Amino acid sequence: MFFRSIRNYAVKAIALLFATVLSAGVAGSYARPVDVNADEDLYPSLYDLFRERSGDPENFISQERFAGRVLGNCVLLNGIDYSYGAQSNTLGCDGFVSLVLRLSLDTVYDFERDWDQYWCRYDYHEEHIVAASHVDKYEIFRPGGTSVTWLYHNYVDEIVDSRIHKYPVEGMDNYDWIEFLDNIGAQPGDILFWDEDADNEFWSHIGIYAGVEDGEAMMWHASSIKGYVCEQSLEEITCDVGYLDYVSVLPLTVQPARAGLYADTANSDKDFSYSFYRNPDCDYCIGRISSSCTLSEQSNLDDLPLYPDFSGDAYEYTLYFTRDTSPFSIEAGDSVLADQTVFKLVMRVEPDDDTKGTLKYAVYGVEDIRYYGGGEIRDYDYMSGGQVIPITDYR
Image 1 (spheres, rainbow, N blue to C red):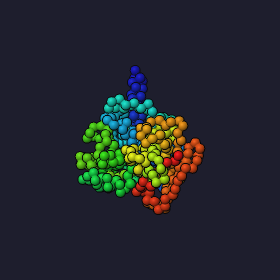
Image 2 (image 1 turned 180 degrees about the vertical axis):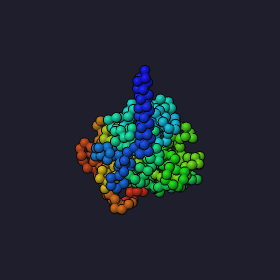
Image 3 (image 1 turned 135 degrees about the horizontal axis):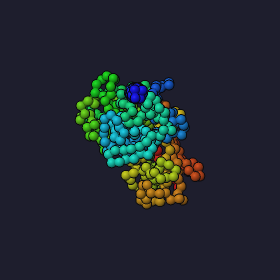
Image 4 (image 1 turned 90 degrees about the vertical axis):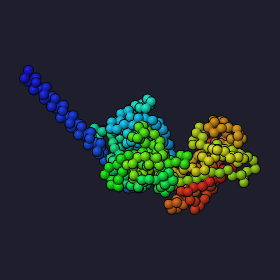
């Protein structure tokens, strides 16, 4: 009995010691779970960092699609309950941003939404374990496995170049926010870090810039005041939350060049209408252009974003389009007739300086590889953009 008691005490002591060491390891992992220092120059955006870490950068998704995934996953998590601390089925502000990025990078699976909570697993094939904290190859941590302060100190101006550092936003109204975000070239999907004071020791909050909607600058975040994940105006956040007085902005993607299309009636004696798509299968309509009337979808083509190519030396964007049988014959999003010609519009901006460059564009047939037309615009203000690419009747 004596030796059995000694053995039991020893087992309990070893278990207690192991638990203490494990807890210390977890606490340490949350403080600094992995070394994320940049190898050389700072990355211009999180996208560039993730593309390199993907292991197959040449086949990584486009910036536009990645930003779309991020914003789409913000909507997916809308209404999830807010929680402090552990975030296994609910979300704090850091867990929300973490989960949005993990969903967008496809390192979670079996995701399920159950009213105001969620459940998912993580792709262990894409993960390694550092100090008891699961980290994927992109080093975006599980909800509850990181913190706003850790992300700030290890990413902002340490591995990714920020758009702006520690800008005072106390009392800013919606007009101030729109002007500020426009001046720094903020893009939907950018990460916003918030703090209550001017020092860099601790950071209070984090969210994802949603863009300007109906004239209001908006942000997605897990709100402790609202009690759930929501989209909220930045003016309301600034006014309602007394401790969010400073902001730093980390770019998700780089600022794109801009170009717009217009219906060129000077070179056509007949009415025409075209529907534009993101892919050659023509199953994702983004807008239409007509020579005979103004279409609501035409505004979608006024300010197209052109993101840098893989080399980073030029901005490029490709659209696909088909001629409608008449300007009023189909609704946007309808399937394309099999015998219709699918055209490809290739746009490229080669910068001369930070705001101006040469815009080149050309129209080809996808199947017959025929050249239908194109042009070149020198000294083009590609950051401001404009409706400068003519679309005429290509029959």
